[in-house]
Image 1: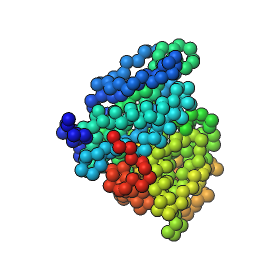
Image 2: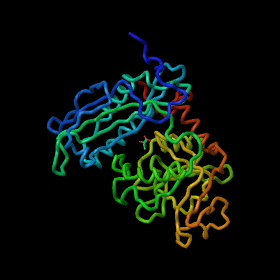
Image 3: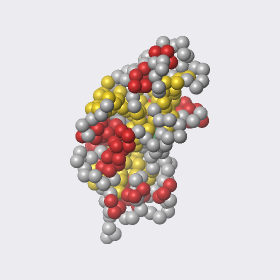
Length: 376
Ligand code: COI
């Protein structure tokens, strides 16, 4: 038998993996029936297509949820491990409940992720690239159903694709979306449902065309507090002398980011503090750094945060934070909070230190002190 894992395939330019779909060997599927109450044994499907009834609630009513996690090659490329798969299993169970779908048992989730990675192991990037195999589990209502009721059958599938990080490694400019609310105050914002993402596309596309690499959502009710970025969680850094505190939003409308919670644990291990609390828009200028945290994104240093706001509005920072070094207005009706000056391409020191420890653990360069690596 050939040794496992096989070396990385030579059909991909590993120095330029990027963030796009690449064809691999296949994916994993299992089907649940309400009648039997059971998941079928995992099946390997040797192509990227899924056979689904056109009247499935997944396609018509958005009855769907997904996950994102990553597998990494260890030093010497001789091992592969998946990062914190147990957390993603639990998060998918939460999303399933929100969208009236059966929970995928944790052991089925873990076995399917391991199988998807193992059967595509040649596509796990070389250790030296620092890149990963992105794992995309999905759950959806799959059998025909016209009425607005949960259907009889559900498919759980796991796809994989080799990737670099989503927003790249350099600082990006963020734009606050005030014209559009991602989710309702008592809505589905804390579940990883496709329906929370599709409506954002035209706004993030328009922002990108204006040079903003990432978009940020405030709370839907009042637009006074920070929720999350469209692709990832929000982390602010409060610094008082040597004391470092990570501040993360306490909001019922955000996804429980595995990357954010990992760097929070790493921060505590450094002796830093972590505060989970509502974050007012007006206090953002007091942070020394802001970064976005997500599986696909990794940690993204935020260069600046721009908001289109009438300067006479009570929410404008221009009067209340007059003279604050970070707040400026290059254009009428717009204000910007800057953390990293134009031309500087490095992340801040807190972000860099957290990222280097996170990547060290993921890539097996540091001991797995937290028990986060799931061997394939
Ligand atoms: C992830 O980070 O895994 C996500 O699902 C975000 C997505 C927008 C790429």
